[in-house]
Image 1 (cartoon, rainbow, N blue to C red):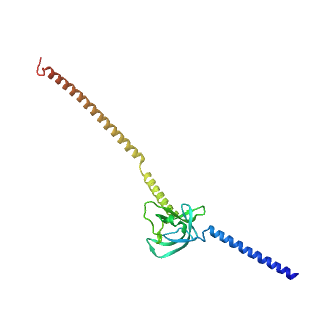
Image 2: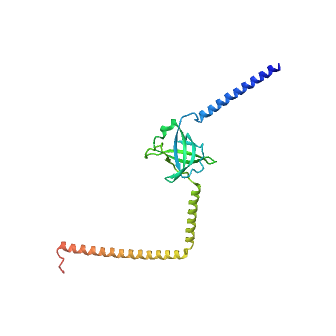
Image 3: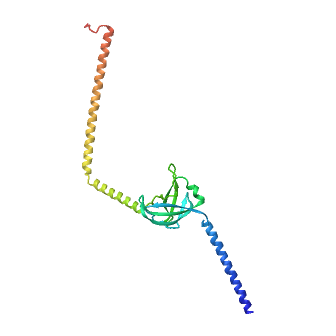
Length: 224
C-alpha cells in the first residue's frame, strides 16, 4: 500500500510539473508574440554624438507606434561626421515600407522618470535615406545647454541693468526737455513763415487779378 501511494504521489508531482512547464511555455510564447520576439526584424544603425542616457532595450517609435527596440549601443573606433556612438535598432520587418521615405531619427525623453527612446519622424521634401548604411541621428536636447543659455541671458540682462543705472536720468530728462522746447520753437517759426508766405501769395494773386482786369478793360496804361 505504501509503495502504491508513493507511486501515485510521484505521478501527481510529475503531472503538476509537466502542467507547470506547459503553462510557462504558453506564457512565454504569448508574451514573446505580443512583444514581437518571434517576428522577423531588420537592423538600422544610427550615429550620435551623445545618446543622453539611452539604454539597450529602449523602444523605437514612429508616429507613436512601437516599431522596434534598441538592440545595441557602442562606441565607434573612429568618429564619423563628429559622431562617435553607434546605436543599433531592431525594426519589425512589417514596418519597413513606412521607412521607405525620408525620415529622421532623434532621442526623446518621455514620462516623469525621463525614459529615453528613439523617435522617428517623416520629413517631407528631403532625399530618401539609404537605411542599409549608418544614418546620422539628431542628438537629444541637453538640459545643461539650456541652463547655459539662460545663464548667459541673465548675465547679459544684469550687465544691461547695471549700465542703465549709471545713466544720469535727471540730466537725460533735462536734455530731452530742452530738445522738445527747441523743436517747439522751430515749429512755431516754420508756422510763422508759412503764414507770411500765404499772405504774400494772396497779395500777389490780388495784384495779378487787377492787372488782368486792366488788360481786359484795355486801360492798363491809362492814368485817368
